[in-house]
Length: 63
Image 1 (cartoon, rainbow, N blue to C red):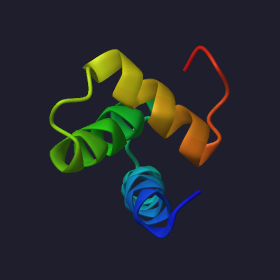
Image 2: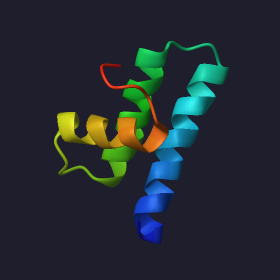
Image 3: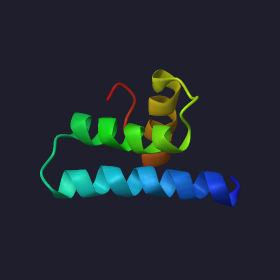
Image 4: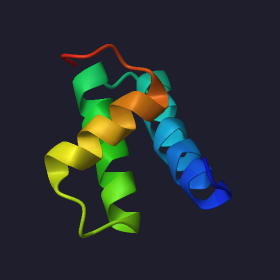
């Protein structure tokens, strides 16, 4: 994984974890993390972005 992709995954992971810490649901935290990823990659379709974020943060499939 190159450093740029790693940084983007870290940003998405941080957004997810912070939302969980603030008491948000896992679904909402995942949606926000996906938005963070899409801000950096606006051409990536939402479904693909969400799948990449799920993989990056280690959320079980089906979340």
